[in-house]
Each structure stands twice: as C-alpha cells, then as structure tokens.
Image (cartoon, rainbow, N blue to C red):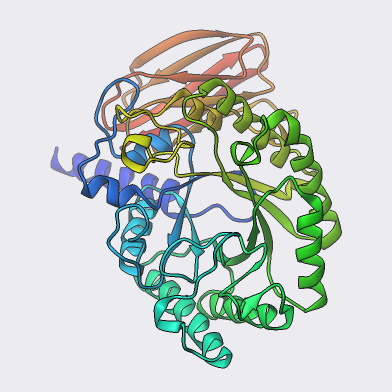
Length: 430
C-alpha cells in the first residue's frame, strides 16, 4: 500500500502547486488586500490571533479565509526598533513576503524612502541621506529600491506591484523632491521606476496619493507628472472617510467618479491601496468597504484593480489605531466579511452558470462559495476522494454561502446541481 500513499502525496503536491504557486495574470483576480506591516511586531510582542470561533490561528490564514488574496508591505530604509513606528526593514519585509507567498497570496511593496512614516504631512529623508546632494539622492533611491526587490527575487518572491513613495501628494524626500520642484521629483520617480523594471520588467509601478475622492488633487498631480514625463503603470489612492470627518456616503460617489476619470484621462489602471473605518462602528465600516469594492470593480473594462485595507489586524489595544478591523480579544470584526462579497463589477460578466470556491486551497476556516447564473434551489454536495458524501444541503435563491465545516486534510469534490445542470470543482484542504 506504500506506493498508493506515495502516488497520493505526489497528486496532492501537484494540485497544491497548480493552485498556489502559479500566479494569476492580468486583471483576472480582483485584488482584495491587507497592509500588514505591524503583524511581525504584534506576534513578537505576544499578541495572539483567533478566528471568530475562538480558535487560535495564523493571522494570514484568518485574512485568507475572508477572501484576502494580497498583502501590502511597507519598507523603511534604516528603521528603529519602535514597535509602532519602526521595523519594516528589508530583512523583515522579506520574511513577511515569504510567508504570504507560501500561502498563495500576492505581494505589493510600498517604499516610504524614509526611516519611518512618509505621508502627505511628512516626507523626511532617511538619516543616512540627509546631507547627500540631489545627484546622490537619485543614486540612493535607485540602489535602495533595487536592493530590496533583488533580495526578494533571490528568495523566490516576485511582487506584482511596487509603490514608488507613499502618499506622495506633495512629493517625497523633502525638500529636494517636493512638488515645488517638479523637475527633480520627476527624476526621483523615474529612477525608482527604472530600478523596479531592472529587477523585473513585469512588476507594475504605482504612484499613490491620499484623498481618493478629490479629483482636483489627483488631476493636479498627474497632469504635472504627465508634463514631466514621469513613468508609471497604476494610480493608487487612499480613502479614509474617518479622516475626512464625514460619513462615507458623503464622498463615495466622488471616489468612484474620480477613479473613473483617472482611467479615462491618463489611460491608467487604478486601485485603492489604503482604506479603513472605525473598528467600533462595525456595520458602517462593513457598508463602506462593500461600497468601495463596488465602486472600484464597476470601473469599465476591469481597470479598477482592487481594494486594500490598511492594517486590518492592528487591534487598538496593541497599536492605538482606531481604524483596524480587529477586536482587542484577537478576533476580526464582522466588517472584514465585506471582502467575502463578490465585487459588482465582476458579477454578470458571463451568463453561463458557474461557481467559485475560495480560499482554495483552504487552510482551515470558512469555505466560501459564490454562484453565477444558478437561480432557484441548488443542491450542494461535498464528497471526499473516495466518493463518500460528506455534506449535503439546499441553497435557496442564494448567490453565495459560507460553510464552516471541519474537513480533514485532503482533496474533495464540491458539486452543485439545479435546473441549469450539474457543476463540479475540486477543493483542497491543506
């Protein structure tokens, strides 16, 4: 019987390779992401993560069970060991990127070009670069960008996206790269672009501004970028109604119209690379996330690539941050379930009946099933590899369901039957 075990192991390995290691290309998978720069520090200081059932789990697995398929990782140049404002070094980012890759998740790298936070209110040079000439700054930026990405490449991680700067509405590496001197800012941005493409020409370069609802702000920046010949692939936006001081319902349509305008005006794909809501207002944050996902996914020709939550795991008891999606008991709030909602822009693209299972492979937690074109009553059955029926239930007028059932490691067949026919998919429990 040993040879049967060996063959089975080879088969599982082959399925896992197909499902995890081969990345999706193009815009076929809508990005549902989480910026998790604090995660390593949280774990190092003893913070424990639990699913809503109370079972302790790897935070990344919890995120994946909520349909998160992408992680965003910030990079500081020479950071301190401060648990909130430091870390995120090249070594730490590489370790986190490997963990994400091993779970089949996609990776975005966010270069701050500072020793700590860079945002619209501060774009401080790294201490080691402060006395450098502008010519040397161009070399510093290129070398730092290349070194981090080449290190990731050397361990088998290929980020799909790289940000040259973080919320650079007013420039970066002040004062040299301020928007008061667009000629120099353009040179810095292009040096970053060149470094990315020198490591891997397939990586997409993002330029990222705050206040994604403000069309004037984005037009001003990207009109100048166009005039100065700045090279980039994607426009990234932050959207935080909390910091705008209004409910999302006041600005959500402006977000949608701004993103659509950017696609038309600059012929670039767009993405919301940061979003967040008050963790105590769970229903409002959930509704806001669904609205943002729908606005981005509804952009014509699938040019709205995705939505990334900033530090959903950053519980306030640890971070002091109000806009996480996590309770202080280590469990995610229900607001995070917004990512289980299929984007409106992705529905109805085909009238052919079908269904999708995610996460697949599944590492424990919810098994989510989305159905297209399967109306009325649908019978769901799950069989193990020997053909034994494990689960059967009826779904009435549902387009999605989430199953919380204990399944042993192995390969299963999920079968849906209704008046439109019979549809099968494989599910791997790892």
